[in-house]
Image (cartoon, rainbow, N blue to C red; front, top):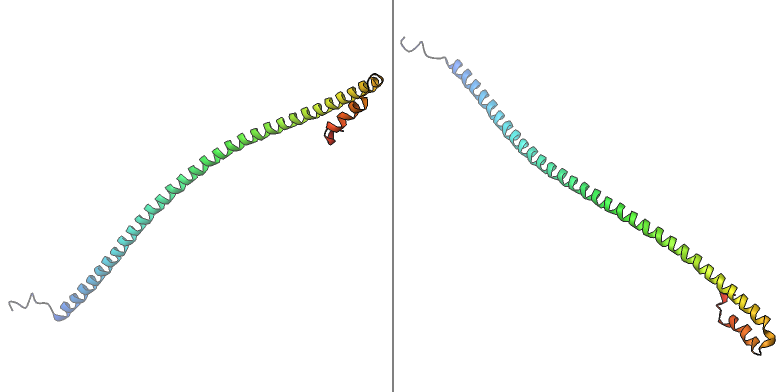
Length: 141
């Protein structure tokens, strides 16, 4: 009588044990999932850090490429100017060479006319007349 009122039935105790085991199992699964989530978060943080480092390296590489491209463009412009100047100088030198060849030819013709006009005054006129042909390069004749 005195202790019967607070006593629980064995079915209730068994039922409470099952509920306790279910809750304990649930909390164990939650703890396992929490551990996996924390590991995933740690891995994601590490991956994000590595991705940030990679992006920073890519940005530095792009900056280097841009700098080198600018230098290359400047060098190309300088080389283009140098080539243009060399080409102009070559054309000018070629024109001067052709003018010089023409003057030498004209001087040779004038000298030949003078020698022909003075043949009767000198005996070595044949030697003087043939001398320019012996000393001139073949392409000038």
